[in-house]
Amino acid sequence: MSIAQKSCMVQRGRANCLGETELYDENEDLCPVECVTEFKTDDELRKVLDKAKETNTLVVVDFYRPSCGSCKYIEQGFSKLCKQSGDQEAPVIFLKHNVIDEYDEQSEVAERLRIKSVPLFHFYKNGVLLEAFATRDKERIDASIHKYTNSESSSTLD
Image 1 (tube, rainbow, N blue to C red):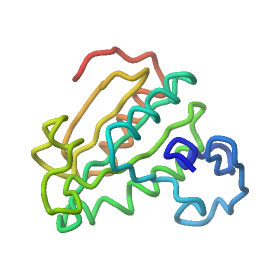
Image 2 (image 1 turned 120 degrees about the horizontal axis):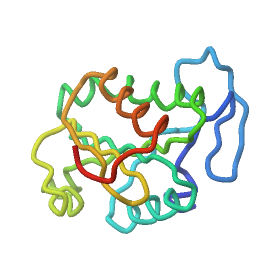
Image 3 (image 1 turned 120 degrees about the vertical axis):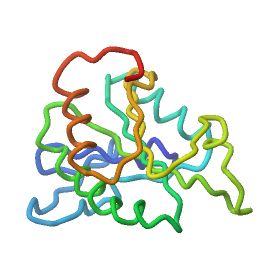
């Protein structure tokens, strides 16, 4: 199964992993399908961005490091945002990327994107990076999701 097939979009009480639909209890804290999908390579990210472009879907990426306390702090909030995104009219794809590779070096993706601090969040629409910021504030992430799903967004980096 490709990374694009595993990317979960949650809409109106259903977890939809690009073709596979599963009902879930809206009172659960987290989506039963792993909504936040991890990718490892530029190719995997590009495939998701290309697929999202077809449907004008917002893609939110959490860049993290396993040893980062702030990254661990925001992880659960980010997962909850995935579940709660089902209340919006527009679907959202949630991804995450470990900026440290299996050799304890900066990943190729992090190097190409010049990721220097984590947790860092990127917001993409139509294949374009709209906004990027480092935070551990779930409300700030949620505000950006609403900004790019509830209105026509600009295609420039904020």
